[in-house]
Amino acid sequence: MIQFDGVTKRYADGTVAVDDLTLQIPTGQITVLVGPSGCGKTTTLRMINRLIEPTSGTITIDGEDVRAQDPARLRRGIGYVIQHAGLFPHRTIVDNIATVPYLLGWDKKKARTTALELMERVGLDTKMAKRYPYQLSGGQQQRVGVARALAADPPVMLMDEPFSAVDPIVRKSLQEEFIRLQSELRKTIAFVTHDIDEAIKLGHTVAVFKVGGVLAQHSTPDELLAEPADDFVREFLGGEKGLKRLRFNRDLDRQDEPGAERQDKPDVEAAER
Amino acid sequence: MTLAAANGGEPLIRWDWIGDHTGQLADLTAHHLKLALLPILFGLIVAIPLGLLCARWRWLYPPTLGVANVLYGLPSLALFMLCIPYFGIGSGGRADFTIIVPLTLFSLSVLVPNVVDGLRSVPDPVRQAATAMGFGTLRRLIQVELPIAVPVVIAGARVAAVSSISLVSVGTLIGNGGLGQLFVDGYSRDFTTPIIVSCVLIIVLALVSDGVLVAAQRLLTPWARRGTR
Ligand SMILES: Nc1ncnc2c1ncn2[C@@H]1O[C@H](COP(=O)(O)OP(=O)(O)OP(=O)(O)O)[C@@H](O)[C@H]1O
Ligand SMILES: [Mg+2]
Image (tube, rainbow over all chains, first blue to last red; front, side):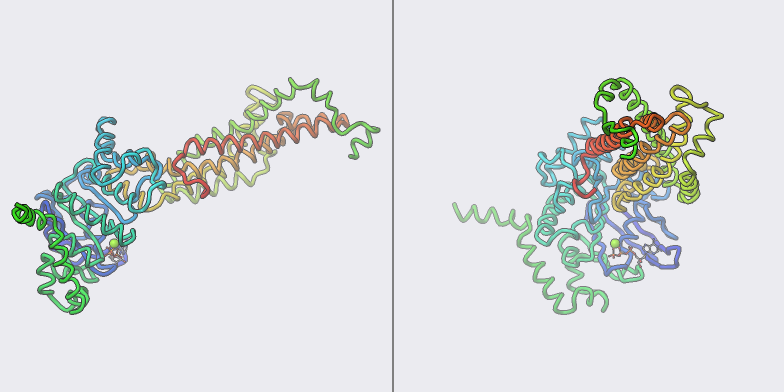
């Protein structure tokens, strides 16, 4: 579990990006941080792996203060995925994915084998292993970004708008594979987006932020849709019209869920008999 | 033309002279290459660590660039003369450093800014991703930023190499100018062939060196998108 306790970040110019944040990101679940541009989502995420240091408050992972750990070592244990993937242009796909294993001093062969396995896992043809990032589409690069973050099997993953730079169709398939992957891997994930549809679709819980870095509501998607905490959240969800649409989509998604299918199956088989 | 005319109908180029002097021409060409390109090699050896330092500690860059630019502004002949007391005069051996050291200094004024620009050309998300995955500053500079800077560094090396090849000829004035030496021979004897031959060979050297560097870049950076650089 990642725990924020009274965390504030004030930048040198006086901007308060995160204001007295107390938040729990439970183990093995996807916690989505959502909110309008500039509400401090990225800042919140980056304080977890110490790319940014909080002005006050503490952040712990499984009870251990992140500030008590060596930053580089801490980061090698936390997967990180960003919007434009940030792949290393000078390294092949397989070597990009094996980055953290190399840093951890794994045997080169083992690192590559793991990387190839991960390529399959995120839905990439291993024929692309020897290509360079510029030879891949945006969606494929993003998959490589996810595989790279998973390579050393870190328990925690930080994802900053990982799917927002690709077109809607590719985004949808990336989201669905991400849900499937997470159902196998059960990582502790902090996932940033400004897209409320994505938040509702992916999150076990959703934390809605206001500009100024104030946490407005943190609850499950169903609670969020049933009872927005205040006018800001209601507005952010798109008012009554938006809520209706989101609730409708949620019901549709639920029918598509793999769990729902599994429950249907025995009935179908029973009917056939 | 005036030379040819003064010579009373001598042809502009006497091919037989070239045929008789191939050995000397080859030696001069090799020597010219050595005088011109060793400075680029030494320049890179100095500029890469210097550029890394400037990228690591940004305040170092303006003074470093200032010094490099002042060096570039100095007349090459003056620098050659300044080196004579240390390395001697003439061609070959130790005296070659009278040419090589100043040309190394000149190359720095192109190479250092290129190394720094190259390091700065690394996209921000790439740098951030590297940090977020647990690269330390030094490791990130050497394993991520420097390799990505290579195309820009080689672009600088191309400029430096071509200008170095032409500057070597100035060394003729102190008796060590590679192919430029043929210039003096030609003028003193009112004989156009060596002058034309040296000009052509210097141009060919510049073109070939440039081609070799382009090929080196292709080889070193198979990851670079073709056509964008
Ligand atoms: N280095 C910085 N110095 C000063 N202010 C900053 C800095 N980085 C971010 N900010 C400010 O802090 C606030 C929060 O920024 P942050 O990047 O965390 O927002 P965000 O929610 O991720 O926004 P977006 O959805 O646009 O990515 C913004 O007002 C931003 O301008
Ligand atoms: Mg952001």
